[in-house]
Image: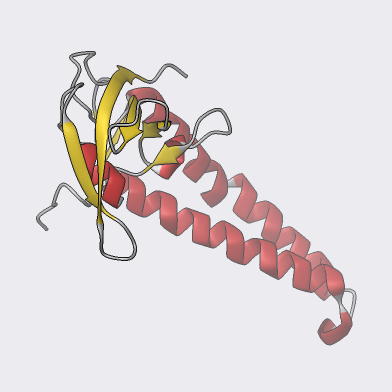
Length: 165
């Protein structure tokens, strides 16, 4: 299977190890624990009116969805070093842009997979319209990306530095 750059998620070794550990927990101890909850709730009787059973089944569904997400993410992951601080926008960088050249109307965000998302900084995927528009551009360059209404928006890249967690 050929991987296109849009399917690849670049991860640091630390991030890869963290996600791999989460997957191992979900497919091991967490799966055993939820199966035990379902079995215990099933023994309580009538399943139609058993809130504990339905809650446990819903939790199981959420866990299995996360297992599938992590499996796909890790299958398509490339592990590498954090991006170099060379002024070029790349995944793993904190980017500051100015809209339409207005240096007072700025946005600072992390260009990364949603797996990196944190409450500290807004995160945009490299596959998003903005992410594709600014990727590989140098500080000082202008970039364009398509808005949901089909119009093009222009931004100027003010800063791009490696993300420090």
